[in-house]
Length: 89
Image 1 (cartoon, rainbow, N blue to C red):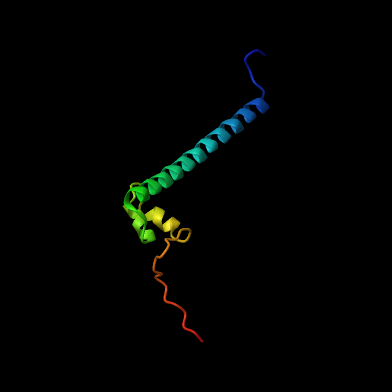
Image 2: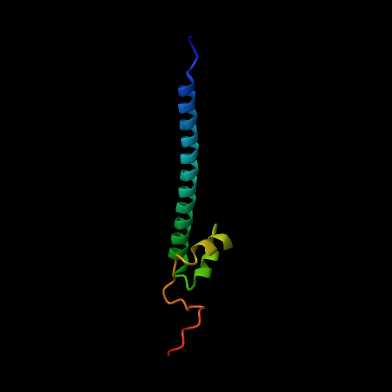
């Protein structure tokens, strides 16, 4: 029959479309992270070094959620720790 597709073809097209949608979502996330990184670098170049991880909140597009995600992954040189030092034995 002309103009009809087999079930296998339709399943393959469905999988392809699903893959494209997932790829587009991934690209959006990568772009968002790139833009945040770029904003952090630009802020630092204009305003100087950060003194604490919380200073990232001064960057446009960086909110409490982002800071919470980054807190364990980033450090600021010279930042004072909020943890109490262990007592020597």
